Each structure stands twice: as structure tokens, then as C-alpha cells.
Image (cartoon, rainbow, N blue to C red):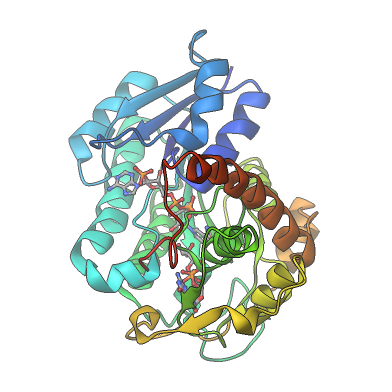
Length: 345
Ligand code: NAP
Ligand code: G4F
């Protein structure tokens, strides 16, 4: 039985990756941060199914704590490490620049040093990001495109990406960078723009919310389905050699395009409901991202199974179920309809 160690197991990608690895009979170990309220909702179904027999194990840790990570790696002796943990919200990284940077930077140094010192056979995956490109060129971006980070988040990701490559080249470690373009799902955090839209439109459609306030509607992103992308992580780690890989759909769409499809689902005109505010405008913006996944398709056999339109639909349908459950709480007087929700980022 192979053992995987995942930082960020409670996040969107950590939850999908755990499902894949548990299904392949891995023993999975993940780090969770202590918080005042329980933050394991994305993996609660997996905890119920797999933790009793010890196939899924959670450990308190934090990427800012090298000793804790090193102690865990010594104890667990994993075959593979997936470093998915990060303060992953780009706008928030302008508001908490040191914390956001330190999380990514300190985590990658600690983990790579531990691998180098403990066991050079351990494979290492780093969650790199299309944000590193900066999005100014309008080009089709691939593994050889230039990085031009526009946020504290992206600058820290460039550092982590470079360090991963440096440890691969300097010490012969199996270190992989997955440069993933935006990927979304019903498990996406509610303050990222896609989920913010699907939560809002479904609540609006049944009378629980009046308006949705957003920032830059002209931004365009190469948006795919998280489950498809996480399958790519597994393929990268099982390829014959470690490398840098772009995962993207090869299509780009604006925030307006996303709004139109989501509101059309309910035959609503998005312009009647959407407001804009400077509050959601970033100090520096990544305007346009479009990736070229040819290398991953050709060498890994990786493929996109879910189109942009299907992604919007599956997120809307999942959030509609959630909104209908919320409606019951409203009808029982346990919640009150709101102007909008959530109200930040
Ligand atoms: P996410 O849903 O925000 O999950 C982030 C995870 O990191 C959560 O488990 C979070 O724990 C954990 N975390 C945050 N700060 C931490 C710290 N100081 N120490 C340890 N863990 C910490 O992000 P995601 O969408 O799954 O993305 C996974 C990774 O891929 C991230 O590194 C992200 O930057 C990167 N990435 C994402 C995309 C995308 O489109 N989704 C694209 C490219 C790259 P809590 O649950 O306690 O908050
Ligand atoms: O959904 P977003 O916050 O995602 P962003 O900034 O592209 O970052 C995500 O993808 C990256 C990969 O490229 C990851 F590395 C990163 O961890 C994260 O997962 O914003 C997308 C676009 C931006 O241009 C933003 O300005 O949508 C625009 N936007 C417009 N109104 C908004 C809003 N974004 C948010 N979060 N909230 C708004 O109200």
C-alpha cells in the first residue's frame, strides 16, 4: 500500500485528490489546521468511510511550522507528498501579504529539505499556478512562457515553483510542478468568483437574495473542472520522470460569460441583478489567462472531460440543492433573506 502525505487536504483540490488516492488503495495522511470551528466539511464523507481502518489519517500541522512537518514525515515515511496548502485567495494576498507569502515559501522549503534529508526517493508535487504568468501578454501560455507575477500570492508561488525545480536539478529528487489554470467545482471556496456567482444566482432564483456585487467583469480565465485537474496531478506523479506540466482547458471566458450562462439557466437577465464595486477590484489585476495543455495531453494522456458550459451547469445544480435546503431554514425563521451573501472578497 503506497502512502501519500497531503498538505491542504481540507481544501477543494485536497478533497478530490484524497478521493482518487483512497480509491487506488493509498494510505492517505493529511494536515489540518487547528481552528475554532471544525473545517473538515469537504472530507467528512471520506473520514466516515476510511478513517476507522486507518486508511485516512489527519494530523494537526501548519506550513509555517517546519518541525511539525519534519516530525510527521519521519513518522509516516510517505512515498509521495502533495503540497497543496496555501492561502490561495489572490485578493486576500494583497491584504495579508506576509502571511500569504510565508505560507507558500516556508512550506516548500521545509518539505523539500525534509525530503532531501530523510529519503530522496519520496516524490514531491508542488501546486504551482497560472497566476505566475501575470496575464498581460494575451499569449497561449505553456511550460516555457515567462513568469510575471502580479500579486504577493503569485510572487510566492514563483519562488516555490523555482525551488521545486532547483531541488530536482541539484539533488536529483523527483520534484514535480503542476502549473494549473483555474479549476472550479461545487467544493470551490465561496469567495472565488465562480462559486460566488453560482451561490448567488441560485439563492436569487428562489428569493433568498436580491443582488450580487462583483469587481472586474472583463477578466478572463481558462476555467476547468477541479476533478479533471486533480486526475492530472496523479498522472504527473506517476510519469517516468519529474517535470513541469501545464494543465488547462485551452479556452478562455470572461466573468460576464460565466454570469450569462449561470443566469440563463433560470431564464434571468444577469444585468438586472449584478452590481459592481471597487471593493472587489485588486491593486493589480491578471486580466487574461489562456493555457496550452499540449504537453500533458501528449505525454501523460491527460484529457478534459468537462466543458465550460457543463462546469457552470454542474455548479449551479449543486448550489441550487444547497439553496433549497437553506430555504427550509428561512421558512422556519432560522435564517433571514439577505441583500447578498457572502459579503467579502
Ligand atoms: P483551497 O480550497 O483554498 O485550499 C487550500 C488548503 O490549504 C486548505 O486545506 C487550507 O486549510 C490549507 N492551508 C491554508 N493555509 C495553510 C497553512 N498555513 N498551513 C497548512 N495548510 C494551510 O485551495 P485549492 O483550490 O484546493 O488549491 C490547492 C492548491 O493549488 C493551492 O496551493 C492553490 O494555491 C493552488 N492552485 C489552485 C488553483 C485553483 O484554480 N483552484 C489553480 C492553481 C493553483 P483550511 O481548510 O484550514 O483553510
Ligand atoms: O475567482 P478568483 O478570485 O480567482 P483567481 O484570482 O484567478 O485565482 C484563482 O486561480 C488561480 C489560478 O490562476 C489560483 F492560483 C488561485 O489560488 C485561485 O484559485 O478571480 C478570478 C477573476 C479575477 O480577475 C477577479 O478580479 O475574477 C475577478 N472577479 C471579479 N469580481 C472577482 C470578483 N473575483 C473574486 N474573487 N470576487 C469578485 O467579486
